[in-house]
Image (cartoon, rainbow, N blue to C red):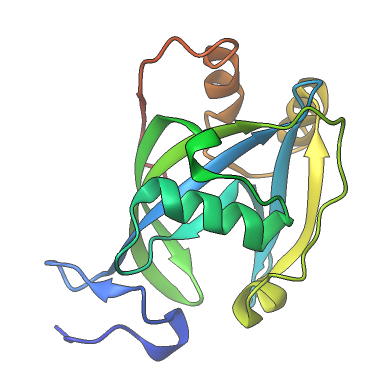
Length: 183
């Protein structure tokens, strides 16, 4: 078991008790004025056919809490700068084991909700890190119907139960959902 994470993952990943690289993360469900959700599409540079769509978010930096990290990630990955106090939640949590940059990793996530009063506003990707620029292909808004079509066409979307989660948040009842681990 190594005491250091693989260098290509980044410093926020640390070996967990089982030796698997681990990090805590904050994610944001970004909804526009019509209820469309903003998702990112990424790929595995080790297998270009392995693609998936997922929510805005990333690792919690040393000294940050989940809400602050969610606000930072929202700004970096979409260009939307908001006061973290404007984020609703956390509305859900998830613990996931998955493949990332050729490594099996574990991530514990807290999901927040943020609604913009605009319809499908432009997304800025200038804040993407070098790794994100290498692995992310696009950012795009999806209505509920478009999300259902995306999933129906066989595309992978994380979290897998995203449509159900979005339905439970209209309006949010204050309950934090626990999403099942997905591999």
